[in-house]
Image (cartoon, rainbow, N blue to C red; front, side, top):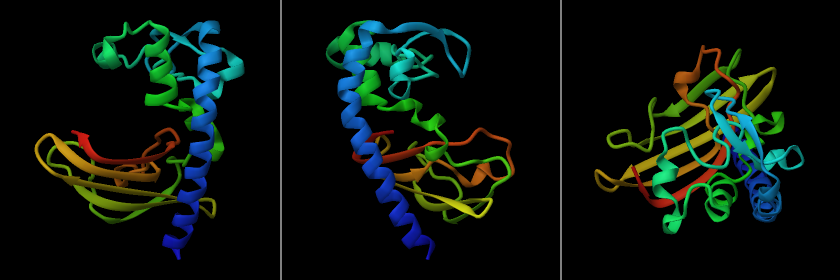
Length: 192
């Protein structure tokens, strides 16, 4: 029965994701000229982010200019400057669409106080040597959140990856971690 509930949950999340992603393509483009300075919710560094009226489509951890490691700055499409309109739009609307959705309770799975069970492999990641599959169930207060993760490694550098639902992993059990968001990711040849 969990698999049926999971399929319904995955489909509902997917539809919400697609609708908000499409809306975000326009909202981010309109909101970018009104971007504001702020501070990262993850590490406190200064970031540029979307204004409050477009908050859902912003990124409170990384802002509009990419991750703290500088990976995005080095890998923007077409060599765009990281602070250009197109690079910031791509980061917020295409690469990490509707990123702040993970802070909305409807799209979060609680970790703290939850019972986390799984079928499949304990550790699955889209990194070399960590291929496998898992179906994770998170239960809290009679509610259930589901996550499916499959990684089939083609080579040392590429893998087939499917990740649906909530990003809870078996090693989150018993931790006081923050609630985790959801994803819909299907990539036939992902760099790992």
